[in-house]
Image (cartoon, rainbow, N blue to C red; front, side):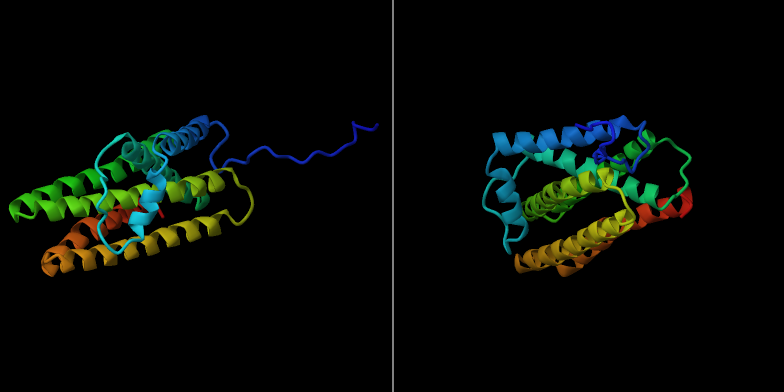
Length: 228
C-alpha cells in the first residue's frame, strides 16, 4: 500500500479570528453546551420560544426568569457580539483595543441596552399604571432575544469556522435576516399593544428611544472608533 503519497483533505477549521484567540472556540463551545442543557433540562422550551415569536398574541404560558431563559440570553449576547466582531474582522476595520476587550465592550453594550429597556419599560408601566402591559412587552422582548440566540448560534459557528470568499456575503445575509426579524417584531408588538389600548404616541416614542437610538449609537461608535 502506498500511504506516503496519499493526499488527505484538510478538515481543520479556518478561523476568521487569529489562531491565537482560543477563547473564541471556548466561548462557542460553552454556548453549544448551554443549548444542549436547555434542550435536556427544558425539552419544550425551544419549541415554545419559536411558537411565541410567530404567534399573533401574547403567550399565556410562564415566560418569566429561570435558568433556561438566562442560558438562552447568554447565548444571544455572546453570538451577537461575536458576529459584530466578525464584521469588524472581515471588513478590516481598525481597532485600537485587543479582540478580547472588543468582545467585552460589544457584549456589555448589548447587555446595557437590554437592562435599560427593562428599567425604562417597568418605570413607564408604573408611572402610567400599565404594569401588566409592561410585563407583557418585556416578555416579548426577551422571548425574541432567546429566539435570536438560537438562530445566531449556528450562524456564529458557521462564520467562525468557515473559509472562502463568501464569508462577507454570509454576514450580510445574517444581519439582513436579523433586521427583517426586528421589523417583524416591532410591527407585531405595535399591533398587539395598540389592540390592548396602549397609546400609539407612547409606542412611537418607545420605538424611537429604545429600538432605533441604541443601534444608531452603535453605528456611530463603529464610524468613529473603528474608522469605518
